[in-house]
Picture (cartoon, helix red, strand yellow):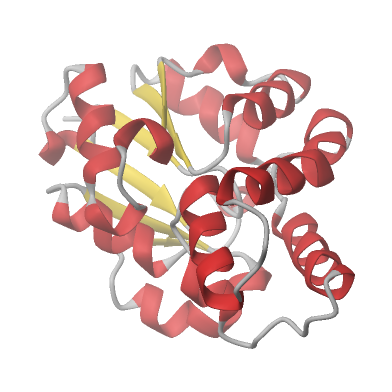
Length: 212
């Protein structure tokens, strides 16, 4: 019997080696406004959509721009990286193809917009492997709520208990469990500070796709 019927993949830090891009963007964004990025900022926005993150940022720092304006600035800052440079993590493409060959359905569950994830996945040759794509903007809630995973399961017509979610942050793992799914943690060095918390939440730990 197969371990699961559907695999639901986060992108940033899970399939895409892209968290370094966001670290640079955050530092540049705050520096450009004469602000110092707080140490807890990254943890506070984990699992939020573009717009939710912008809303949080505007409110916390009293910025004069609207959330929509801030989200547009971030999008423009990172678009070139996703279109031309962001790569898959080593071994990720081979793992996706193996799952597909074994008959698993594949879904993307991400906070990214299609304008960012589509060119990155197409350039890396894996876009066509996925059966459905779901974003936090579409689900209307953050990752921790679990709604994005429930929506993906409904689109795939697969029972939640037959789904495996691949995530790199505790909030994603918590959401997967709330949705009644199994959860695999994928290691990323940029999330090392939350590794112990995340490992306590997951059913499976993947340090590198090259090892599986």
